Amino acid sequence: MALSGIQIYKLLPQTNCKECGFPTCLAFAMKLAAKQVELSLCPTVSEEAKAQLSEAAAPPVRPLTLKSNGYEVLSGNEVALFRHEKRFFSPTGLFLRVYDDEPVEEIKRKVTAVAAYHVDYVGIDLKWDGIAVQARGGDFVGVITAVRAITHLPLILIAGPEELGNPQITQIKEEKSVLSVKSVDQKLLFAFATADNWQAMVDVAKAHQAALAVQAETLDEMAALTEKVKAAGVEDIVICPAQRGLHGTLTANSTARRMALKQTFRALGYPILNIPGDAPTPEMETIWAAQAIGKYGSFVILDHVAPETAYPLLVLRQNIYTDPQKPIQVQPGLYEINNPGPDDPVLVTTNFSITYFSVKNEVESAGLPAWLLVTESEGMSVLTAWAAGKFDAERIAKDVKRFNVADKVSRKRLVLPGHTAVLSGEVEGELPDWEVKVGPREAVDVPKFMKQALA
Ligand code: SF4
Image (tube, rainbow, N blue to C red; front, side, top):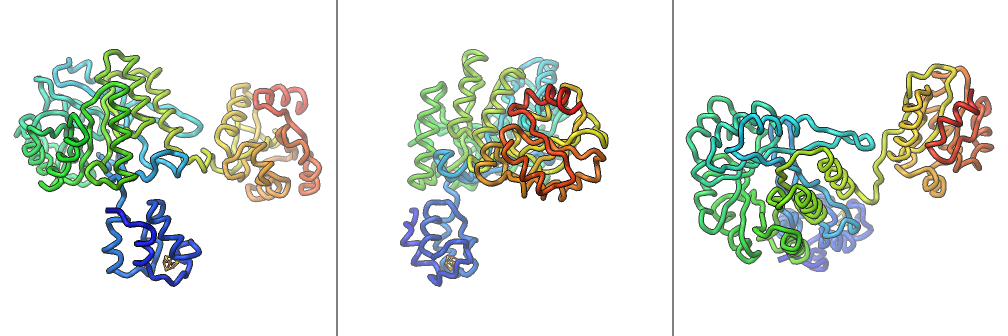
């Protein structure tokens, strides 16, 4: 059972030393009870108290990392039911499913497309995360081998204990280390353990040190099954509600996660697997996937590869799994656009990613050379940063000096964003040997301004 804040407080040193970053032990205890901090922040807690607090401190959703040859898909370890309460930590892993009775050329085409797909989104490289191989009476081992010849993305293997226990898999393991239990950087997910086959699935999962996805019709049955699987020695568990479709998935995912986070119900405190690939059409598959990404899906399996559906799903995931209190930002510094020279102007902006990319893309696509000074403004957009005191003359001047901008140009021209025209006089005061100009308010107007006012 979860401990209350007061119960936790009684186990803490009660010295109010503040080393944990909180003013009192009670404040820290309350945060601990809300699963918003780690017990390790208190350096003086006794070993005895640590043992007693382990239940309270353990993550309510058990973490699991699928991995292979350097690729990793994190899951679990969530502490919030809603993103605005804190943040979500483990982005949904997107997996493409192939079947072992599909033509091998078709499998290769799809897997190659997934392995090669990546798209730049405000400086973040968005990609698929893994491949699921499902047995359907074909050459299960042959398809795994074909997939591995193309990519080492993490695998989910969907089959019964007979296929997963096939000696040929052992043979592959020994000869090529494809599924080697000795390969320290590989963690597979096997699916599905059900009420009928769970003991046999536990055996094959243990043989490969794989995680095991458990599937059941109701959450009561699911909880009973996870308890049995855990007691039999597999702790890396994923739950897969048997319900498909929007209503079934939403209800099952939300209830399971609510039980895990609000009731600390350990039997459902695991990452969740959803399979939008079972949808009746590719369009519905995308909608099911979007819902699963938004509502607690840790691993989402799709059957179709198409950039026009992959891109919005990846962007959706990116937006849900960023910290709402920490905007997506780029590194402050001096950036080059179209190989600028010493006579080219220095445009100034903030380090909010979308602001940075808006300016960069407009100037770059216009073919104009420029220096772009991205200032440290805690990831805020221009107006927000200015209003918050994070984009002012002092900071701009400081970054001009910090990034040695004067060493790059002979003609010292600084262009401020139009929204902050009010800063121009102060910037001139801070940088007396610079010519300070006020640019347009919108990035789209920067090329025209450069051609007319900076020629
Ligand atoms: S570090 Fe430990 S002892 Fe010090 S205030 Fe925090 S909880 Fe209390």
